[in-house]
Image 1 (cartoon, rainbow, N blue to C red):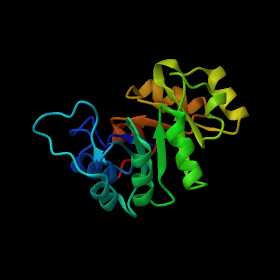
Image 2 (tube, rainbow, N blue to C red):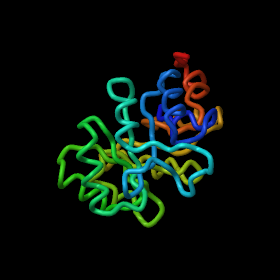
Image 3 (cartoon, one colour):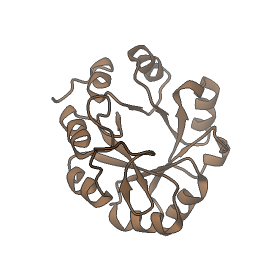
Length: 193
């Protein structure tokens, strides 16, 4: 269970309170967006919301929840700076292949999620740890192709209970959701909070 931008259905996304809430609820991972300069925010940032730096988020999450760092508009420097801060259990996520390829060259073995369907084919994601499918575009055929390539499968962003159950029945490895507590309850895992 991946808390998309924290427990963003309850609290402002990409904020320390949203990440803390995801931890309280018992999510497996918290996913957040990192921009050049290591600012944790999604475009465009909301006015009046205090967004943390990558180091602050990692400090909050350390030893408490897994982290999935989505690289937004990444430059080589952003990839290098991110890798310098995250531990070996972190997962990097991106829509573009080049930043993930660079990350794997710089730190072989780091897990990456390559989002597919927006200029990157499932075959193009073969070097990643997992393929990320948009909820509205995921198909059984696509999931099967990813598995044949040895990829784990993730689907984003799923907030409908019936859809969560359907994806679980299809054997999806993980889902991104704005409501991790509700998702955990739907899938038979009692939320911690």
